Length: 240
Length: 240
DNA sequence: TATGGTTGTCTAGATTAATAGACATTTCGG
DNA sequence: CCGAAATGTCTATTAATCTAGACAACCATA
Image (cartoon, rainbow over all chains, first blue to last red; front, side, top):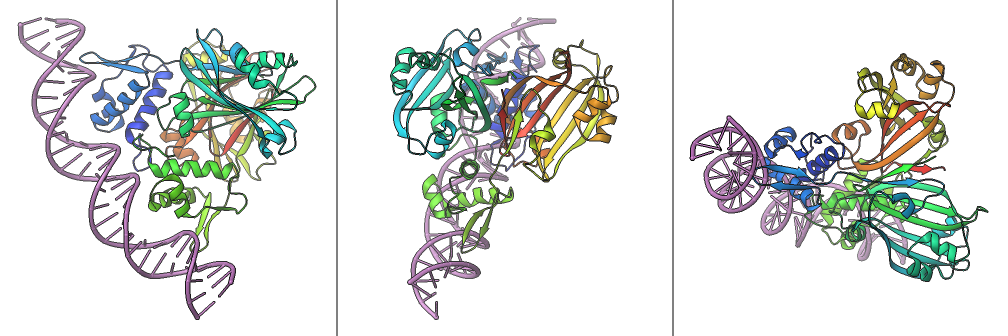
């Protein structure tokens, strides 16, 4: 069931298991989480430990406990984020949430690291524009991203984004009307302190990191981005 | 830095951070992890806590400590697993590891749940073949998967796989020479007890779950699979 | 209104995780 | 060969987590 002495507190393991059961629809019949005593028996722990787990889920806004009645499930769905040749943040999520926005957190002109230079086919040290974005759906943080653009080719990227609020429109304002996803690498890991704060995650949460390169129609890389999604709020859907 | 009272032990948070630094190449210059005292200062914890983290990494076979000299990095790479229209497990990983194998853990004929029926365009309750596989590269567990096939169309899937050791060849033996990836959904979460055991993960580890549907050339779904990858051993590369 | 089932709260104790310090052992370079 | 720097081992203490039990508060329903 749950394991001890593994560096993850029992209440957190149990919270993760319950969260998964909720999103799998295991409790859809009643719309409620089983009683604390039943969960304690199921996981072989004390009721107080289950209560810690449920408190953490309540903190995330996933469940709501009512004295005398039980613990109701408030929210269970993950946003589905499509990844395809024409991946666009706002288009892909439209219809799944009412209020979508991408906010510019920071921007800076920096020399390309080897990683960035490789991705954009520049030389290390070439000037790049870095944009840090935070994307939200209905007020909840969905992803934070760091993007790099060639400062020579897209010198006004930050200004355009600040005005237009969209990468696609910012490219258009720079004279690039179309671009396609050239490659996407996906890894998953624990969120770091910065991501916890930006996405308002409960500590120990998981992020899915997508390292993507977008290219113009001639195949030249125009954007290298690393987007960190809150793993418990989204799923990525690959369209091949 | 690291956070307290979040349900994840400090040594585990630190182990995760160091593992990430290793795989990012942060210590490539020396090939060694920084001294324990330096790490303790960096993370703001006691040296003993760092030692617990390093012991866990040594247990995974990632590092090797030598008294008087320091802690050397043994292994850092993640396997890159491609996902495209023609995703094939063995082809995709060939060249990245010497010894690749997929082992049949279990198989059973079961009635389709709603989830499986939806994916395979069957009716709930229709007979399905379920295959549980464990894939390894160089003796290390990479992924475990559960696949469903229509029992009517592919009645001998389990027998074929047991003999041939490959989904592609098992389809061929059933008269299906070609198939393509129709859809892939990707989520990330903490590994459950079963996955921890199968993949020999250190508890609390992360898995990336890919829910995939393969279809024949006519577009009819032939396989629904849920593959759980050890997140610290692989990255998924999307080829659009 | 009485009863059973549920969550909320409190106290106490046991177990595990983390800190603190001291010192041994090994390696490497001057 | 010495000393600095690194890991290995030990003891003791403090802090956090989990268990155990009791009982209060609340809700639904017979």
